[in-house]
Length: 352
Image (tube, rainbow, N blue to C red):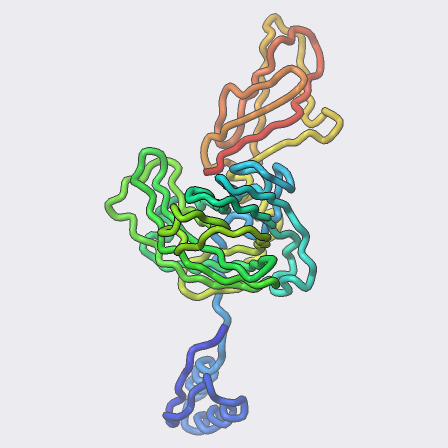
C-alpha cells in the first residue's frame, strides 16, 4: 500500500513519494530551525506513511476455519464451508477443504485452510458454477463504497467474475446487482483488492431475510453475460482463501480474528451437535411418567440471527416443536418408563 504525497512547506519540489530518506531528513532538519517543536512533530507525522486501520470484516469466517457439514461437497447449496452457498446448474463441481502451506499466504500466518472448487463445465446457456456468501442486512453499506480483498489462484491462467448483489428478502423488491468485475488469476496465490459502489436502497421494499450477496462466478453460460461481464464457460480448479469485505476505498490488512470470535459469528447463523461416534452425543434421563411425550430444551451458545430450522436425531426420534433464536424445545415420544435417551445429532440453521 502506498502513501499519498505530502509537500513540505518552504520547498515546492519536495514530494515524499519521490524523496529519498536523506532528502526527508534534510527537509525535517531545515524546517526544525524555523518551526516550533509542535510544528516539527506535525511535519514528521505528515511525512510518515501510516497503514490504514482495519475496519473489520463483514464476511463471516472469511478465513474458512469452519466446516461443520463436511470437508467435501458435490451437491447444491450449503454443505461444506459452513457460510458459503456452493451452487451449480448443468455444469458440475467438486468442492473440498484444502490445507495451506506456510509459504502460500505469508501475509496471513493464522490461515490454515482454503476452499477448492474443481469445475467440470458443460455447454449450455443457463449452466453455471458459483460460490455465494450472504451478508446480513441489505441496508449495510447502502450508498457507500466497499473494498473486497481476497487471495485466489487457479490451475491455469483464467478469469473469474465478482458480483455484489442486494437481496431485499422474501416479498421485498427485486434484487439489484452491481456491475460485475473480472479478475485474471495465475497459478500462485495473489491478493486482489476490488472497489465496489453499493447502490442506495432508497425507494426499495425491504423484507425479512435481506442481505448483501457476494457471488464469485467460476463458470457462466451466455444467459449470464450481463451479470458476469461475459465471463463464459470454463473448466478448471479454483482455490480461494482469506476473503474480506470492508467499508471504504482503501484495502487494509486481513483481520485475523481469534478462532473463538470467528466461531461465535458462525454460530449466529448455524449451530450443530454431531454424533461423536458412540451414539452418546447428548444423554437425557427420562423419568417414569403417565405421558409418553417428554420435552427437553437445547440452548444455543449464541443467540441466532432468527428462529432456525432444526433437525434432530436420536434413540427416541426427537423432533423440534418450538424453535427460538436462543434454543429449541425437543419432543421425545413413545417413552413412559425410566430410561436414558440420546440426541445423536442436532442442527439449527438460520443462514440466509
